[in-house]
Image (tube, rainbow, N blue to C red; front, top):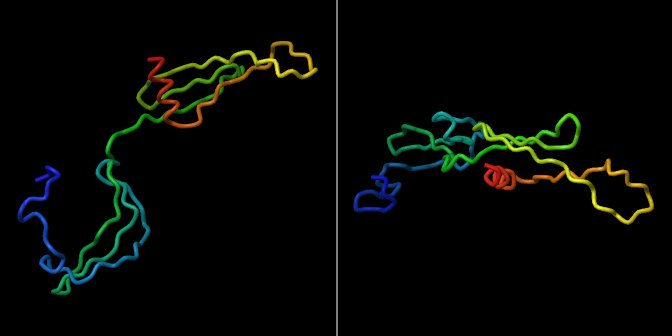
Amino acid sequence: DGDGIVDDGELTSLEDAGIVSIDLLSDNQGYYTAGGDVRVHGVAQVTYADGSTTTAADAEFVYQNAPVAEAVLTDDGQAIEVSTDDGQALTIEAAPAADSGSSAVDDGSAAAVPSLTTEEEAAAAMAHAG
């Protein structure tokens, strides 16, 4: 009934279900189904006592859609534009580089562009800006 609690009659043994074998080797033929909400990594054969067969799937189900961010360096190289597939956008401007103590002349043209190394960091930056 989908309540996450095993009630009487909801759990049965393989023997009571008539299953005599389940192949443990997947065909490794992955695909998406259910509108992209289910990713099947592969299937294997299940055999019943009467000789009939069906398939068992190694599947993962979508729990929550996470925003996917794409970061692009602007043409002038002075900013990063971050956008998600749901239309949110953020521009991160470059800051002047800190003095590294070198003897080279720093004319202020060098810039340190912050990096977003994970999707979580990109999503957090976008949430902060929005």
